[in-house]
Every structure is written in structure tokens, then in C-alpha cells.
Length: 299
Image (cartoon, rainbow, N blue to C red; front, side):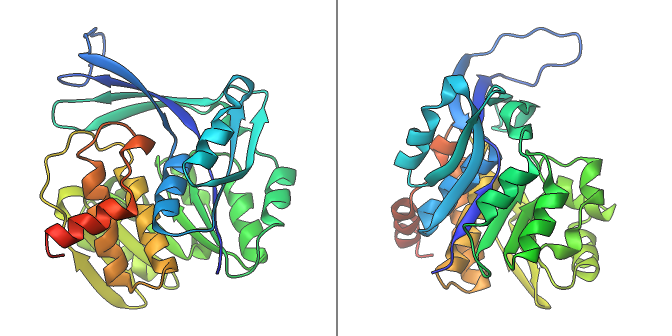
């Protein structure tokens, strides 16, 4: 069975529950502050591992957080390629408002300390047909994409958090491009979902284009086939990790032999469960929970 490798971030998330996001020059009190393990790389690896086996994470932690490697292993992710470096572990400062929406300030820390040699060494353990999963929370993405494709790996990319530097990446090499409305607008220049989907599908005809729309579901273009899946009707508590959960369950379901439509439906259910819970990696449902939801809701 092919393997899935996430090269990505690990963050320590400090989550502040607030009525509304703080404005410039304003000081507010939070209702509570909680600490979670997060980072898009870690979140995606956990979600993947709950949908399919053979999931590996290559990431960096600071020396004071070396114990995270065994914690990650205990969560079901192969942490062989998690390495301790001199830089501190990445951190995310997250506000979650009364509607469950979030805003995030990142400090890259160890996530920005990858080297060419490290990329080459990690990729040497994988074979053509395996899948590399990436997000925009580490350094060296352009080089890494090129190295992976030269080695015959498939590449899935979620360009989040979106920055203008993403426009300079070799996106034509991406096999699966998963974007939300913000990232889709950044890439296409339009806020209209239909325009985003058609623009990206035309620009990258060899790629699967998956556009997540939150409460409005998902639209996708795969090999010329348009697929639309409605979102779950749930009350959001915290949207942190929803996109990462979606990505993990979508790619993991495809690895398990699901059709595109079935994989999208499974991913929508998993991410819908995630938003009803606080935290990042801790909010990602197990496969048993996803199946139980399907059974009780006749999905």
C-alpha cells in the first residue's frame, strides 16, 4: 500500500475564548485560555492517520518539546522523521469568538528550519506513487515540490495560510490543490466560488481542484467532472483544524479506494464534527466517530 508523508508544521496553540476579536488599540479579557497541540502539518497527519494507515510526519520541534515526538507516535502517526532542532517549537496565538470563528497569529520557530539536505534525506525513504502532503507553514516549499515530483511522488497542497509568495510556487506540479474561499480568491483573483473553481481548473488541468466553502459545502473539479457536496448543519464551536481534518479525511479516503464523491462526503462529515469541538488536533474525530455519524444520520 502506498504511503502518505506530511512534511509540515507543529505548533503549540494558545487559544483564547473571546466574545469578539480584539481591535487595534483595544485590550479585552478572554473567558478562558487553553493550550493544545496544533500546526497544520500535525493536524493533517492526525486526520490522515485516522482515515488510513501508513501516514508519516516530518517536522521540527524545539529542544524543550522533544517529548512531543512520542506523543505524536501515540496518536497513530509515524513520527520517525520528527526532529529536534535548536529553534523553539512554533506557536500559534488563536482567538475564538462567540460564533466559533478564529483568527490566528503564527510564530514559525522550528517550522522554518528545514534544509535541502533534510528534504532529500526524508524523501529518500519514499517511492514513486507515494503522496507528499504540504501546507504553507514551513520554508523551502518550491524546492520541496520539485524534489518530490522528480522522485515520482504525488503532491497534495493546501496553500494556507495564504501569502503572495504562493503565487511564485510551481503549482502546475501539484496533483491535488485544496483551497478555501480566501486561498481561492488569492489564487484566482475572484471571490465568486464558480469563478474560482473554473479558473483554477483551467489553469491547472492536471490537478484535482477542491474548493471548501464552510457552511456552504464543497465544490470540486476532478478530471473534468464537477462534484458538489453539501455541508453538515451543525453549530460551530471552534473552526480551528476544520480544513486540516477535511484534507486528511479526503486524501485518506481516496487512499482507501473511495470514489471522489464518497471521499468528499466523508471529509465533510469529519470536518463538520471537528467544528463542534474546541482545540486543533484534539478536535479531530476518529474513523469510528465518523462512521457512527453516518449510521445515525443515514448518510
